Length: 332
Image (cartoon, rainbow, N blue to C red; front, side, top):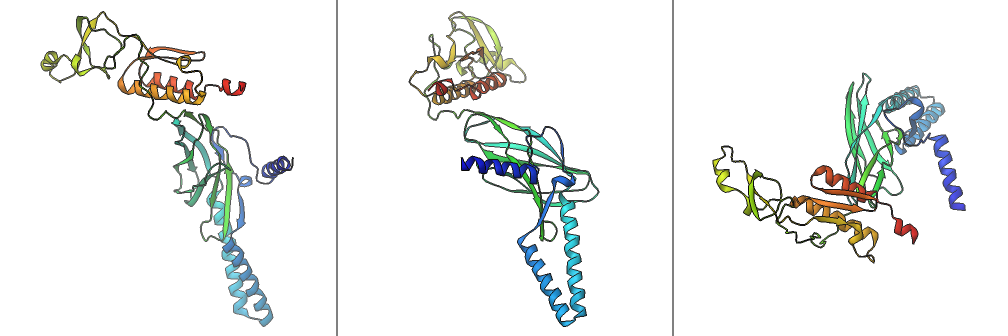
């Protein structure tokens, strides 16, 4: 109960004091109300020094002491303006993302646009989350230009991985003050299951051969066709290849004796096997079939794909594996 009240208090203060928001879609503008500024440790030390100089100047009536105190104070005020201006009025926009496998780093591309007439220097960006190790990236942005920054976070589970909250901060130019702002981009990365290491061979059925392409048999010669990834070297039509000027590869095509279908089926796996291990094994088989160019059917729950091969088929199968509901775990 105490922990929940503390969490609610932090969320309320974060939203009220620092204006923390939910995921923001599209471009975000850092107006003045979204940028905060406070002295750093060096800035606090500098402030204490100014107070001491002022008191000594008053106590001993030092004209040069007053001049030095107000000169340094003026520098601090200018530094405050420059530090705030270095971060305020930036335009932030989410970029592209690519799917990854569990255990890999999810990459989030961010675009920072500076549409003002002054350059911006030493802007630091990093994720802030209880489960994310803060790795800061620094960038400079010239006037009327944009800069892309890629932040990464380690993935642990399959499914959708949302971008953690981002903190932008700067201490330019003197480091006496720190200006910062928060941004929660509406970005997600699809995380595929981690492929099983040293998984079993592909589940060949109905006499399918490992060196066949799965689209033709091996009885009667029917002609030649263009070479496809996964064709056996023994099926190459060397005489026809020698006659082709550009040396393109062609393969002998046969009729009859069609090889069996390669099917990656969730229901054919042992029932005692853990659901996540099943998904990891199916991921391993999908990747193995794609590498060898073997068309494969895919069956997972209510998702069924006919035999095919290629990037689109692979992405569809891996997406189904990533988003498969843990029905067995919820039932347990």
